[in-house]
Image 1 (cartoon, rainbow, N blue to C red):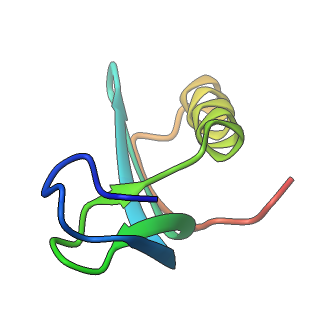
Image 2: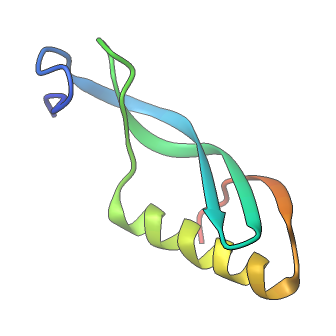
Length: 75
């Protein structure tokens, strides 16, 4: 797909690091599958992966985690 940020680059399969903050919780997910612009580096995460990340963040918040770094694992 064409990058909507720089309008010049095309995206390629890659990975991203995503940081989510909720209330008192900060979670960093590494190796998240993404489309990455070859020109500017903008990262696009699809909706299914985003839903999984949000569910994981919610579970971490319920368990009392304050800061956590995780490697992404597909559900």
